[in-house]
Image 1 (cartoon, rainbow, N blue to C red):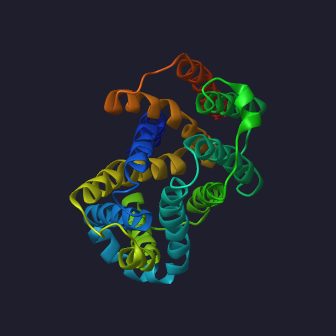
Image 2 (image 1 turned 90 degrees about the vertical axis):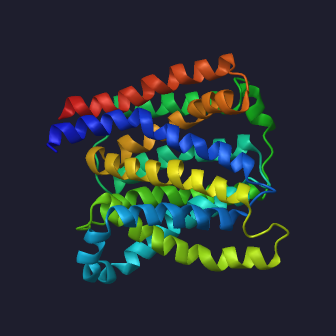
Image 3 (image 1 turned 135 degrees about the vertical axis):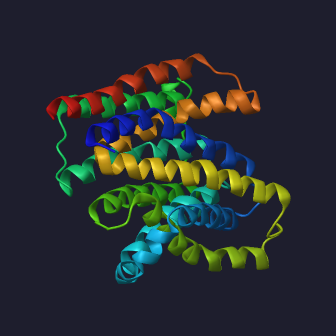
Amino acid sequence: MSSSTRARLALALIAIVPVFWATNYLIARSAPGVIAPNTLAGLRWTFAGGAFCLLAWREIRAHCRAILADWRHMLVLGTLGMWICGSWVYIAGQSTSATNLALIYALSPVMIVLVSRLWLKEPFSRPQALGVLLSLAGVVHVVIKGQWAQLARVEWVAGDLWVLAATLSWTFFTILLKRWGTPLTDPARLGVISFFGVLVILPFAVSEAATGPLPAFSAQGVALALVAAALPGFAAYLGYAFMLRELGAARVGVTLYLGPPYAAVLAWLVLGEPIRAYHAVGLLLILPGVWLVNRARTQAR
């Protein structure tokens, strides 16, 4: 695949990958009372990691020595991207509101932009900064349902710390995935990272099964894990890793802002929840913001 074709594919994925992320909102809302957080995350990455490894098993076998030599990086990435960004969000959903969760997660693209600019030295122009601010305003408008006075009435609880930790974790997962080089292709690398992530999650999932009120396995719980593995797992992480390699951390991070309006459409289609005017207003802010971030960089090339 030529460099121009890869770039066009990466730009196309900007509109597609957030659809896969958005399905995790529905999964998180369906999981309480059905499957425990670490069990869900563990099954999700067992299934998704198995798919990655099946896709790239020859490459993984050929690079066994390089993988073993790089196990510390893989363990860190598995901890950040699969355990903290998986289990901890599901744990937070049990005690904090969806509004708080979305508001805190809205900080992630901003932090990715700042860290990538300071650490990776990725160029970032004023039009791109304006794009980030527009997208941030759009996603906050969706989260607070267009009622900006609600920000003063938001109540913060202990569960918000879980979300904040996950937000920070995703920031550094993105930056380190870009910074740490590897001879592996994206499917092979994600397969290995998933393996280490499952190793980290496993003792917590076992503890949940031994002490929690929920059964370790149920048909509905396994079904949720399979969907989580296929869409916000396999498809979303593979697309995200490809975009990250082709476009850079700052440009890819801002695409997370498409998640809330996409989630509203999915909730309308799947759950019958109505789409409101504030969804449209938010999208009208988010789309130009994402366009500015990516157009400014494209013109600079």
